[in-house]
Amino acid sequence: MKLETNEQEVNVIQQTLGTATQDIGENSANGDFAFSAESGTVWMYDQNWYNSGDIVPDQVTPASDAIPLVDSGTGVAGT
Image 1 (cartoon, one colour):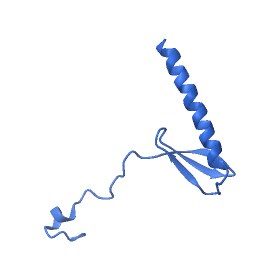
Image 2 (cartoon, helix red, strand yellow):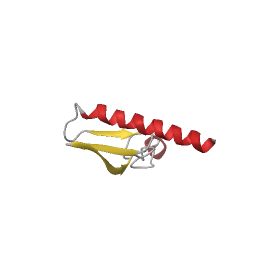
Image 3 (cartoon, one colour):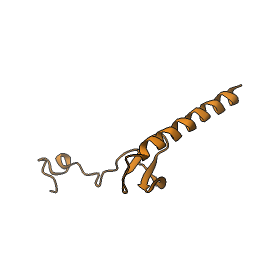
Image 4 (cartoon, rainbow, N blue to C red):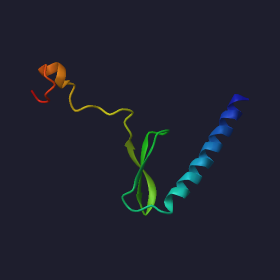
């Protein structure tokens, strides 16, 4: 029973995603992109939408672990 329910839910999601992708395409221009929070992928547009294979990071990684206020004592960055 649970397997049937999951299969039905997957079918609904696939239909919804298909509709959403078609809706996006009308006003798209080459170079447009979209992020999918659910799948974690990046969609690119070049005549058609395609999955770029890039993964959207779940968080931004800082360039440095340094905290200026703690490091310098005065809050001046880079000292």
